[in-house]
Amino acid sequence: MLKTIPEVIAQARESLTIIAAAEAVALAKEKNGVIIDVREPSEYAEKSAAGTINIPRGLLEMKMLQMYPNEAQPIFLHCATGARAIFSAEQLKRVGYQNVSVITSSLDDICNACC
Image 1 (tube, rainbow, N blue to C red):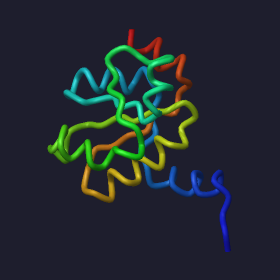
Image 2: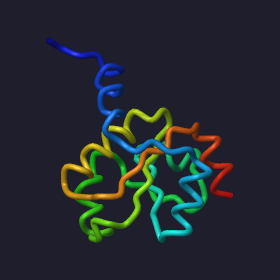
Image 3: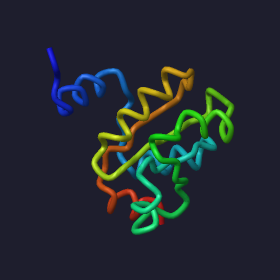
């Protein structure tokens, strides 16, 4: 039986850590974490939060293993709607990252929290 994307996202959320933007920014600073925007580079160039790193969802696992080889480092993922961030978090957990959270706040809230 096929599932809709909202159904898949709802199911995935159950096993992920979901966090608000302000809390993610505070924890990233406190625990040497990284906030990653998984949108496409053109989206990131149009509007992005200060201090975030752009690694598109399609390249995430390969780039993360090169750039952030510590599986325990706190990683906070976001996108425009939360869907790509949720799928990205699932993938990072599959490759062994242990401290992955999804920021579900709006892009504006993330931009405001990062300033």
